[in-house]
Each structure stands twice: as C-alpha cells, then as structure tokens.
Image 1 (cartoon, each protein chain N blue to C red):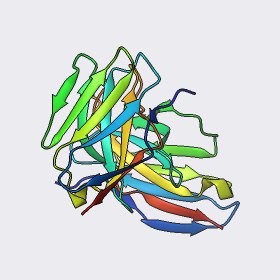
Image 2 (tube, chains in turn red, yellow):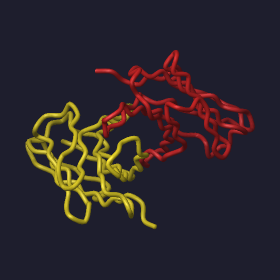
Image 3 (cartoon, each protein chain N blue to C red):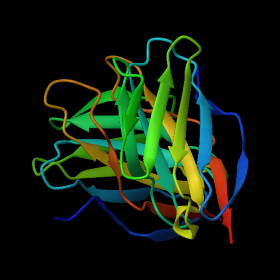
Image 4 (cartoon, one colour):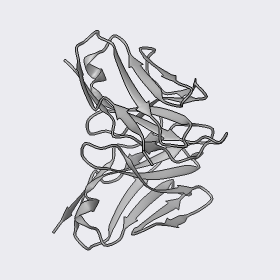
Length: 112
Length: 115
C-alpha cells in the first residue's frame, strides 16, 4: 500500500543549529499532516499539524512547510537543543480516513 | 488533564496465547485508534473505534479485535499470538466531531513480547 517515506534516516545536528527534516508522502489526496516526535520508551508526541489549504505553519521553534506539487513536507526546528534528540515521524491523513499513515521516521541526534 | 493512558506498560506472552490491552482516551475525546509499532518502524494502523463500533480497519487479520465502551475507553484483543506480534501497541485518541482531520494524541503504549 501507499506509505509515507523520509529522505534521511539519521540527522546529526550541532546544538544551536537549525534542523530540517524532510518527508515525501505518497497519497496526493491526503489533506492533513502531522509531525510527531517520539522519544525512547514513549509514544509519539504531537508537534505541529498542517492542512492542505496551507503551505506553511509556525509553532514554537518549529515550522512545517507543505509543497503539494511535489508531495513534500518538511519540519524545521530552530536552535536545536539536546532535548530535541528523538525520532521524528511525519504522518498523512487521506480524506474520509480516520487513520494516519506513518513512515519509518528520522532519528535526530543533537551533538554539543 | 490526563492524557491517553494505556495498561499494562509491558507484557510477556507465549505463542498461541491471547492478550487484552487497555486504553483510556484523553479527556474530551470520543474516538480511539490502535496502532502497532515494530522496532525501528513507524506505527501501523490497526483499527479505529467511534460510538462503540469499529469505524475503519487497517490490514490486520481477524485475530486482532477490539471494543469500545460507553465511557470511550477501549480494548485491543489479539488471539493466537505469533512471534511476529511482538511490538509496541499504541492507542491514540481524538475527537471526531463528525469529521476527520483531527489530531490524534498517543499514549506511551504497551510493549508486548511473545516468547
């Protein structure tokens, strides 16, 4: 079946730098997207969402960009901190579906 | 305000046994979804419950079944356990309000190990 995929399985970032995590989604009909952060031993934690009628949304230190033309999603984290070390997932929600489709995730490692 | 709670946190079973996992949704949420997460992979959708009925189902065999109670809590049952059922089982809750595209909030999961 269709699935969400990520370009980079592991991203190493120096503390204080900005991080960019990329995601390619497969279902062109998907109209809602969420970025989740998952720390070891915990469930996915909601970071930010975006609907298909938007191309950018900002939160606290995070920005999500959506490019529907190329079915691409990205998460930007400003001034990356050690607490940002985790696996990040993008998830897509096709219309009329309750489920979210996740990719394998990107491991972000923040180095001092 | 309590978030999504799941029990137990860890469980060890043997092949062929049956297991029941439990989930209490976040306060104010009426919809519960269950996901299976194998090690190193993203969560895979099992099914979703709303108004005590299975609303949607992913590509999982009938050995996986569920239930939702009037208080919106939910159970996931797995029969005839296989080694491949070893995974983290996640519950996510949301509020449907008759539409989709609502954020799902996850619990910390139940780690199920099959020996």
